Image (cartoon, rainbow over all chains, first blue to last red; front, side):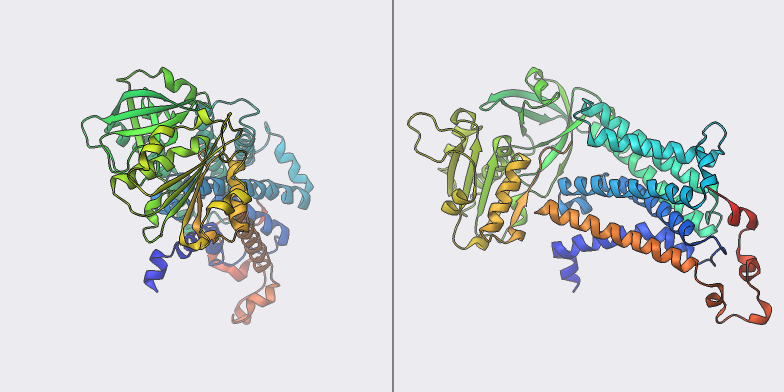
Length: 445
Length: 67
């Protein structure tokens, strides 16, 4: 039983969800230890309950985004961040409905929205809700609003602190239940944990990262508008990683500046002394990579991620499906497999705009001499004389190449979100077991 | 698929949380007599006396405060 709980990924993931529910509900449960105040009515108590649950969920967002390896390894960081986005929205709705019920229940309370004359407890509520609202709007519509990633991230952290801090202040000010001893102890502990986590992620971790610097050794152009950034550790051994994992990279500035970006390593996981990143010029930061001079200081926080062949030691082989820059983690897996003399079969289905855009094409061909590797190139349009596959990686194409015994392989997909969703659906239709399909959304921002 | 499963988990957990909130509100608003079961009725009356020394020092704040 203990082995099942510790090693079965579904059991572990379920345990985290139960923990999430319990922590969200504990503040409410503690209230039941005390006799209920009389005669406040169902709707007011329901409103209070939503307020407390919403606040607890907001505090839990600090845990979800604190890069806690144990939690992250159960789901993958992309799923965890998506969970963070959705549960934040749920918390926001609860926080919004909470005062609405009060206003409907007792319309005279609408006077509390008169900010200059309202008591502090109501002002704090307004500030907390506004901070939460700005946070939601700037996150969902960051790109249409053209907010650069780095300022957005700093603003997001500040607004999160304001929302939780003022939300807690509002609860204390109102005094419903908060005068109970254990309630105050519990909420103080939750707030302290949230504060510690944000301090850890924003200050302690960057400080630890700063003590292990790297230096840019080279910036090499690759096919498909991709640049390989080569880093060497300075004064330490670097880190080994599971091929397919990623790290948060800070270039040329102090890590406390929070100007870090996630990138998959493209080098061998067993070469901690030379770390390489394949970076495609897509956004404001990535477009500047080609201008980075050798010798520039760099900092890494990692490795992170569960998108790796390493977790499937028993698998008879792997099907790697890459689109564009999604080749980066796959390339790391293949190089590492070659260095380890892995004798299992690898099938790489690789899609790109054109034949000239297949990043690492020559290097991949060379790997065929070292491992059992089959590559199916899928350019969107074939050049003259091309007699291979063209178009998109669809169900028909997959059916031609994946083995009849679908469950004998692990399937790893890394591409643009649209392609990943299409391939995932196609694999599902081809009766590939869902537990054998693994994906990583490399656009985490 | 993964995102769909995750979305279902978010919806389920949110419904559980809202359901728990509803249950909490119902528990806190049960008819007073329910809460008297097991108490010495001769020494206990309805209202604030029921909770006696366990309520905060300023009962007015608890019963009348608004957000």
